[in-house]
Image 1 (spheres, one colour):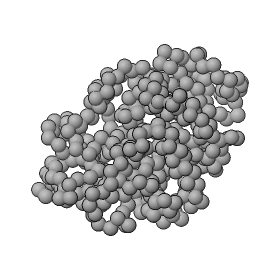
Image 2 (tube, one colour):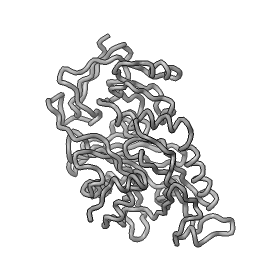
Image 3 (cartoon, helix red, strand yellow):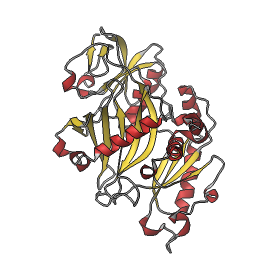
Image 4 (tube, rainbow, N blue to C red):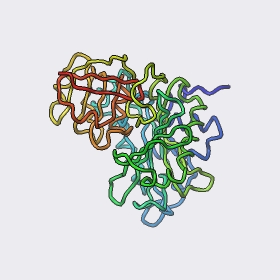
Length: 387
């Protein structure tokens, strides 16, 4: 009998549902982290696992062999929404830390602002959180205590078989360097590091060595699984390690969520061969004219009072906005700042909601007018002040 992704998402949520769907389909074992799952009413005591953290303890009650865990929350609404809303807790080394993480994740997911945000997104919400407990991916060659690379990949919704791959590289501090490449077929055609155009030689060795192809191969396998409808591009979050555990691949699947419907550009705009692929969504060829709403530090209420379609530009968007910010009439999203050309959560939340998004900071940083015109064919874009 064919598997139905909707059954998995409804029972387990988007994060866990994807993992279990691929597990049950078969052929994905090497790409799935060792994981245990809890239904909404279950506590850590209900885990029946025979994995190491349930069997072996050190005298100080840390997990044996330097094992670290990550605890993730999951809900059916996080497949179509709730970007960076249901939280995760990583670098967990003791059983008590696991139990505390479960309590905190479920408590946070039942705060009034989470119910309000679900209403904003138009999804009924019950606050019943499923839990995923996984080995935290490690890499002995990474500077920060062996923490592995994490990242995401999307097939561009306006040019099939063109992929945007982003990775966050750990450093000795909490800061992660963001590297972004555009891959056409098997060739890297555009590179950025922390928002600046770069040469391939400046990027992490997973790109220079061709390891990124394993991530795209995994993406392709997930695409053919039909967990996401074939007419829709999706974002796949993944981990990557140079030192995988026995029987596991360098690339590990974390989550897949729908992004945008595939749609070919209906007209040409600029030189597609030189594109950095920093826009999504298509306007009429003459463009669209919209009021510009610039969100600063203290005017979120003013922005949310706008009652006509407008273009949203967020000045300080280095992390995900508080859930109280609910821009109901946003039509277009203009990314701003040094890492604007990114699909990190703080940008992806709005890119996914907007009809049109422009991520090119060269076009967005000089905007200060009341009205703007946006022209986008999904590959290239023009943004100009008209008033």
